[in-house]
Length: 272
Image (cartoon, rainbow, N blue to C red; front, side, top):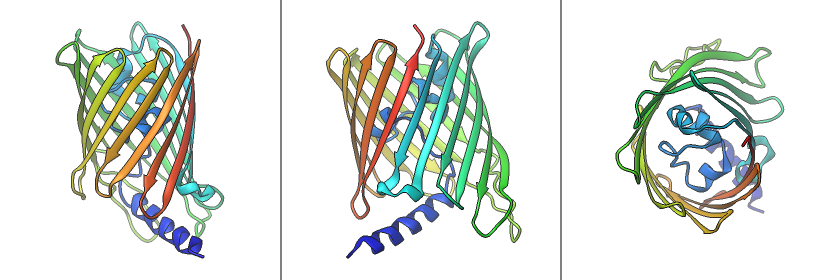
């Protein structure tokens, strides 16, 4: 009986998201950690902080799928490819949000460079497009992202990232939009190889600060358990990951008090 209400509420929630950052995250590991991932490095750093790509020393690629609130209309499919070279690390990322007559796409090309033993920096150029049911042609714009990381100690790494600092947006037929810049600052503490604690703050130029946190620990060598929480509105996340030879698989779930669960899965290949 209440399903139509939930769908309508999800629709307006999606519109609110579209009016904000227009920048979705990829990777089930990060999703399980409430996307508090600005200082952490893996295949999906192309969606969080490209500077952490410089810490990767092997080719990797991944695919990701998320069904927000279990609705196909709000599905997110993404991919990421990371290529380390002697000149720096390159990253290529893509996502599609939505299905049918409403879709959003983002294509990103990243370059990350280790400037010193502790300091890394990066830039990514993005092409984003949006297709609305009432328009025959898609709207698009180009923007960029910049990021940096600094390793304070062997256990503590700090990361900072900015998306769309120039506030570019879509030039609709009726009006020109300016999407907000998104600033992220965070750090993680690695107690050892088996426990990781993460804390991050995110600020959109037209919204209040959001605090995100995550905990990851490995009870077994190839198995990771993850939990996260973020505020405004409060969302809880959890998930697990498993590594087998060159393949790693992660699943995640997030919970919204009114709309329910969002499942996600990603699979990564690592060339060793």
